[in-house]
Length: 575
Image 1: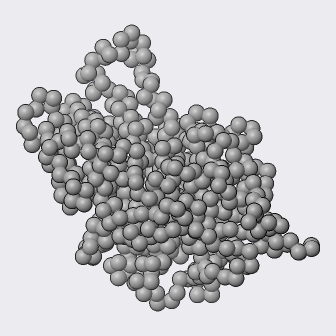
Image 2 (image 1 turned 45 degrees about the horizontal axis):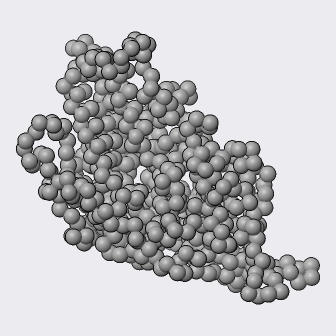
């Protein structure tokens, strides 16, 4: 593997020597740009740089996207409270991480597609490699255009579908001020775009091109969108045909026979290159060159460089992990250690009291010691505290972090230092999506087989019946609940949970609840040391009850866009 996708940024600044030698780059003839495949590829690369998702690794989303669901609460105060109590949603807000209007990027895609169709004409004797390259360029840009549309559809519902470049001299008001397409029309467009893009893209890449959008990425992303369309938010009558559409596309991904689960869960975000068969669509980072702040922003207080604890896992997430035999966790005696004999993914996701972390395997203690004054407990430095760099839940983050990084050596700092890859789409999500869709079309046991693969990799014991804790003859309803929980724990902090709760129409039930922290108290009686484990309402939730209103399922179109386009109609709940 010679290069990764992070080199695309460098590609934007370089080209052939004859171009670099020009004194006035603005004087480059436009016809040259659209006749040279190297120049065209530079244009394609800009879509990767500008529109490739980075999820929670983006500094602007580091706090919001985790705590807005029921995965975490932050140690930070103001911003965290504003998100969970809903005050940041509104037509005139510009600081919500996903309330965006992507028509600048869509126009750029339309311009590219128009130019390549009209101006990059291959000769009659063009080689198959030249034809494939041209197809790839088109497929990649159509993929990213579909992605930008989907990022709006899942937030607003139907949006104006624009596929042509609107000339600055255009006088037709229906083109200048387009109306919204219906949600159904918007779904149909995006799904068709991704299917057709998949037909133009290669199955795999190697060498310098590894990391670009593939046929599998387009199909897997299409299947994700079809799963949304089949879900209660967009399919209230539960028409089975939409589930079957998602099922079929997920099967298409699997039948490519190029993806597999990584044998080690924690290495998914660390192992780079073609040997990592789980990753399908990802954003890479490079040590010392292009880094992110996930480690620094989620570090325990004792190992932090500046403020940390952007995402502190909540007790609800911890309780969702099953036992090591796959059976559900049941709350036990408060003096019983709740972390014994649990799903190994729990430790790969969170750091709890007495656990080790970091390059020196330092112990992390979050307990509260008893003191002579019961009203003045003695807090550990890493324990629950009102300080924004201390955990607010009794837990710290482990998932997607690199424990080899050492803050004392300057390996990480605010917004920088981490170079694990953000994995937007991975094979585990494909299996979970297939399991969900299979169940809804009456093929529950096929869904069970997918969960068995997930749980086997996780380290869950198969049991005598080889069902990894999944009950025999499980009903469709019970399996639906099981799949939803499996997504909660397997995909935790991968920017999936909030959107899952929305599409299942469960957000108003799950996100209106006060979430809990774990208060651990240490008792010393002579030489005997014991702990008690008590669930408490998380400190932000005590005074600011979380709010998710029904109208939050479809957010308002930005006010500034309504002012620009008089034909845009605001969502009914926000008029």
